[in-house]
Length: 173
Image 1 (cartoon, one colour):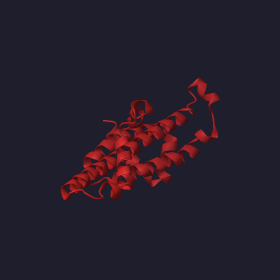
Image 2: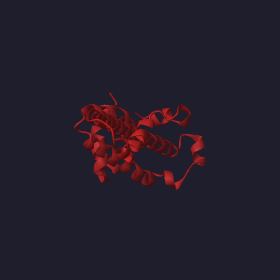
Image 3: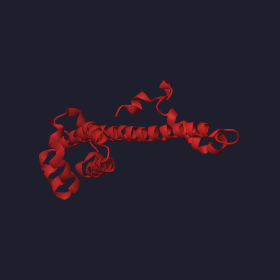
Image 4: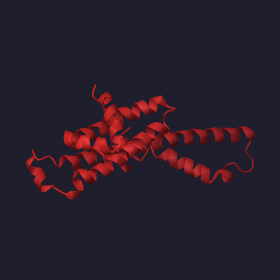
């Protein structure tokens, strides 16, 4: 899920994006496509094809969302890692934007998006499982980048961090 954007670059012809463009054109020109001379069976076939494209777009949107979340989490891991004093090069990358208070807000937004997706997809347990496996494990890695003293404070002040702290053990089996 997280690698969709890597495999859908322009050099590959954006093959995964093409059906979403086809759906856009289908919706935009629906009256023209179904005008004059089509039988009921042909219109039914077009509606069925349009339904397949709509289904594909929903799946594509989930995959794209996961790819975007994965990219954000990777960037956050890098930013949190720049605070590690045991790495000599981090002294040159020190920035107030990479301090715990700044990153906390962004990680909390990611947690909020993570749980919103879990709630939205609860009718599709296979998608929830896949999302938890791929994005949840990345989220758990970000969470482990905070040292214990900071993590305890975050858990105390944020119900989202507290919820994730209680659930994170499933990612480290």
